[in-house]
Amino acid sequence: GAVVSQHPSRVICKSGTSVKIECRSLDFQATTMFWYRQFPKQSLMLMATSNEGSKATYEQGVEKDKFLINHASLTLSTLTVTSAHPEDSSFYICSASWTGYTEAFFGQGTRLTVV
Amino acid sequence: EDQVTQSPEALRLQEGESSSLNCSYTVSGLRGLFWYRQDPGKGPEFLFTLYSAGEEKEKERLKATLTKKESFLHITAPKPEDSATYLCAVQEQSGYSTLTFGKGTMLLVSP
Image (cartoon, rainbow over all chains, first blue to last red; front, top):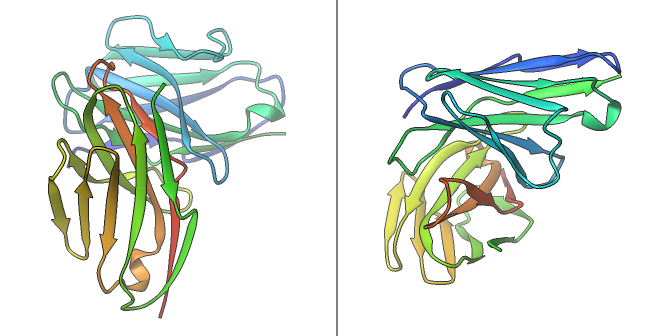
């Protein structure tokens, strides 16, 4: 299957700082990338969908200015959590797919802890 | 609104004890139903996609089936390494390839 690499796997940051998470498709061109958030024992909640070269489409209730998504190339998307607060602590996961293909492949996830 | 309900929430099996996980779904038009495996602290690992009622797919000790209302993931003679959370997700025909996930079933297989 296709490989998606997410970095870093864990990050601890101070409240008020910003954190960037990278998602790379290693062996295919990802026309679409998705960002999810997962709380313990909860489902994956879709935050936003991004297409290469276009602005991301955010789900209802997700703050665009807090969670900045960039999908500048067919192999890289980034999620920046701006002015992070403890309530932003969570497990963030990206997935990637390509046009006409139904399956999406997931990265390893990033555990963000804001102290 | 698409809904996906998985049961049970948790399941404990002895090694070799076969069982099934359930995924009930409500969607206006199903493009695909997906099963993923997720290990603690990791991203989901793709297992199967089912597209139409009556379809079945197998991989090692796992077999997924689909009806118009639900999907089952059958685990035959499980081993401890099958312990993980199994996630079900649906993709709507009119959707933008987005997936709606259930909360998952946490499976623990004891030796």
